[in-house]
Every structure is written in C-alpha cells, then in structure tokens.
Length: 71
Image 1 (spheres, rainbow, N blue to C red):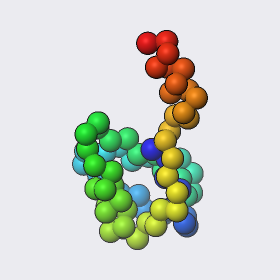
Image 2: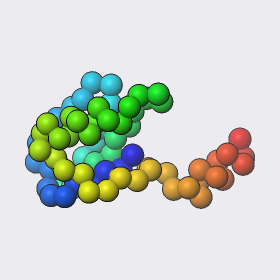
Image 3: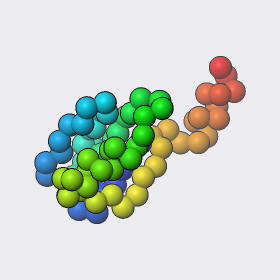
C-alpha cells in the first residue's frame, strides 16, 4: 500500500511483521503479509503521531487485471 501523511514524516519507526519504507517527505510504502491486518500499521503510525490522509494500492487496477489475464 501507499500511504499519504497529512504532514512531513520525520521519524519513521520499523514495525515487526511489516515492511515500511519512506518514499518522500510525506509518502510511505507499506508491505504486509497476506492475511495480516493493516490495522496494526495504522495503530503503529498513530502511536508515532503520523496521520494518514489517503491510502491506495501500490499497483493500479489495470496492471492487476492484465497480470491476472496472463497468468
């Protein structure tokens, strides 16, 4: 997932069981294992005063559809 924060992220802390990467001053990429809850990520970010304004899938739907068709 790609998450957009409401302000600049200065101190992004790791979270066990999730890969969190800061892409720019207010965007982070989060990868979790299938079956894991994204709620843990939001709780973790909230604990560190990071407010998320929007969330989207890393891959766009057209790309996902194409990949499903060729598999």
